[in-house]
Amino acid sequence: MPDMAGQNPPESGQNPSGPQIHWAKNEKRGWIDCTDVSANNRGWPGEISGLDPMPFPPETLIAVPLVGLLAYTILGISGFGSALVTIPLLVHFLPLQSVVPLVVMVDFLATVSNGVRFREHVEVAELKLLIPAVIVGILTGVTLLATLPKHAALVMLGVFVTAYGVYRLVTRSAARPVSRWWGIPAGLIGGLIGGLFGVGGPIYATYMSARIHDPAKMRATLSAVFSFSTGLRLMVYLISGLLLQSEVWWAFLLLLPAMPVGLAIGYRLHARLTREQVGRFISVLLVLSGVSLLWKAI
Image 1 (cartoon, rainbow, N blue to C red):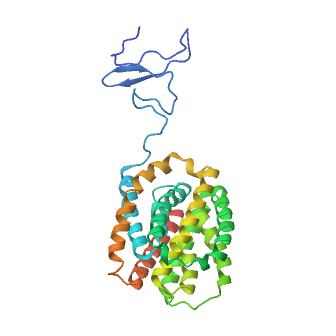
Image 2: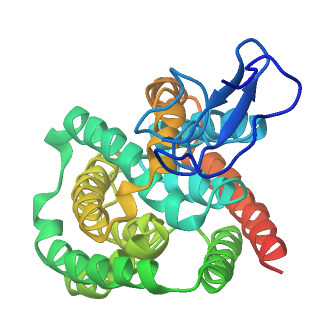
């Protein structure tokens, strides 16, 4: 019988009546036989479970809810833009392949909330050409997300976010009216970028701003598009396995509480801030986060 309170571990070796014995020391209980515990889950009674322990360092625990609070405040003000904030910033703390499905889960709840709140203002006619194209684009984008090398995906995201931020800063907000047929390329490109990076909103917003000039109707219609887009992506991410990562669900628990708080703040600020002020703030934030992503990739 080994001395369980001894300073040195009992000899590890072949147990005459069983497998290799593995010992682990606990300050209070001495040496404990962990033979039947897998190498990745050796610990103390009560700590072993089917769910991995929270895998994040302290800075990630702080950053995720703060980024979410900022992002969903912007969503409450403008009706879009949450993914433009969350994804480029959270990629500094989590892998892109985990961040995209994470943000889509919370965005789905947020956009459905917006869609229900403003459903009477939705321009249904604008969705007839857009939605079928969105489906094709999303299926293509999710396939690329699951297969594209991580470094290449990070560089592409950095380039897109930076370029779009610069575009917003140098382009006037007024948009020329366009034909409804532009909904097909807008849906394809927005779905592709949404499936790959989770940030297809700018494409939809650019198209809608050229078609709908009433701010309330535009916000409501965008919410309807985002609700459908995020719902479809959730199903595809689940089928592809991207939604089954344990760190996605841990981060979801951190990000979710920030969503209703941010939306409530955004709704209050909506009447106090002009669209131009919010747009310029988002643009500067995009440029900074895009450049930081490219620096990270280098």
